[in-house]
Image (cartoon, rainbow, N blue to C red):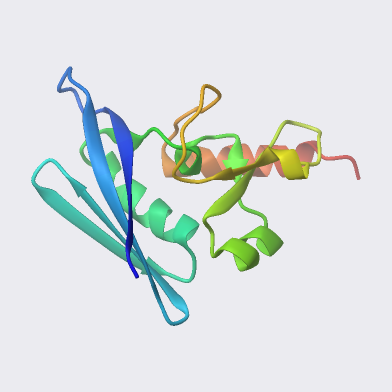
Length: 136
């Protein structure tokens, strides 16, 4: 059964608030994600919703848009066990040099005051920097 989530979009140069509607559908072992914004529809199908969101974010970047949600925040990334448990719908807020706790889990489509929206390439750079900051 499909589920819909509304997410604010920032950027895009329109000067007004915009929203996207994400439709999530679990089909067997795959995760299908559809994003409707403006008069456009973008779709992605991946093994988990976080990866599908990354695919859609890359298409939104063409219009200069960033989703304002935890899944697009520099300091949020799913770990392998969390991906498996939630199909990529949950991820961890991370801080340099610290291992995340259970209280750091967030829904990737939720929003909060600590979101740092970034483009996909910058997201990966932050993740790599965080991994390097962990104690050996």
